[in-house]
Length: 170
Image (cartoon, rainbow, N blue to C red; front, side):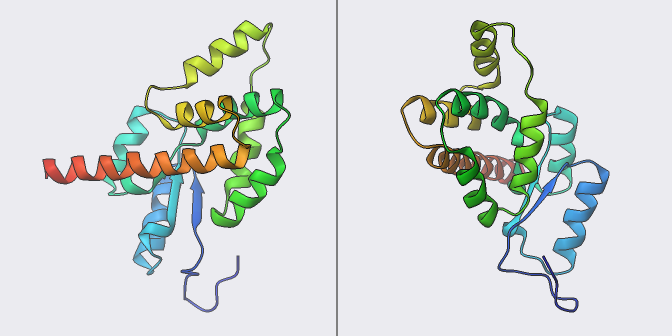
């Protein structure tokens, strides 16, 4: 992506992989430079401490978690779904998604049995969460693209809920 002058590309979504010090700083700098906050997505590996720091930085509504992808990829591969097409489409909407996909493929564990794989998928699926939404969608026969879109929609629902909960506390 090329920026023209000092103007950020406001028609693009920027995804930041990792919400450590560098990721949070980058996100905050983009916002300070005029990049629309709602077009910024931040992912992290799921540590509670990182989630808390995202909250403190005021970026809770921007977070997404790429940890749903490994379980989804296992199911999609087993069903021989067109993963590459779906990743390409989502990458156009959420820059950086292809990198999340590469990360997800690289962290897939090796399983000794199908039962171990099923247990892993079950363990990764939090009740009411994004992974559960994607897994259920795939198990109902949706395409990988449709399942990812449902997961993204669920992520937005959770973010909205979290934002509302935080505003009630404030």
